[in-house]
View 1 (tube, rainbow, N blue to C red):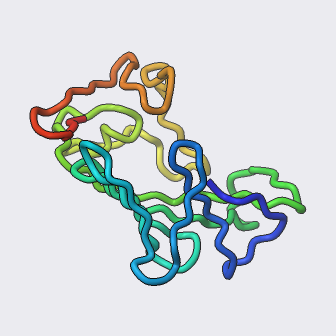
View 2: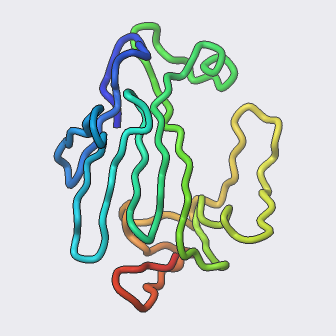
Length: 162
């Protein structure tokens, strides 16, 4: 999540990290990380830069690199976002590294991690869309319930297989 700002300043940290609805402070000095140990796994949020960049690691499941970046004028023009002059919109640029994925992984992003996956998306258009969102509708972000999603816990202490 990011702070609402009317103009973007790269020298200001606009990233907000929350855990269970509460904002947490990720230090910018020393170890520069916030962590919580749960019964089954550890969650670590660490700074990868002084501002607007973090790595979130959920032990034995996923590592995510997240960067907050403002949408520039050229990007606004190309994608026709029609952003107001007195407000800043941002992207959360993300990279994922999953651990213990099944070769049958499914989901909007998940299937892109399958061995030999080839995207059906038409490239070269300003806003490519994959479609098929009805397959992936779910009651909540953390629910494994949808028409084609699969979730299976792997035997062992707190290791999930997606």
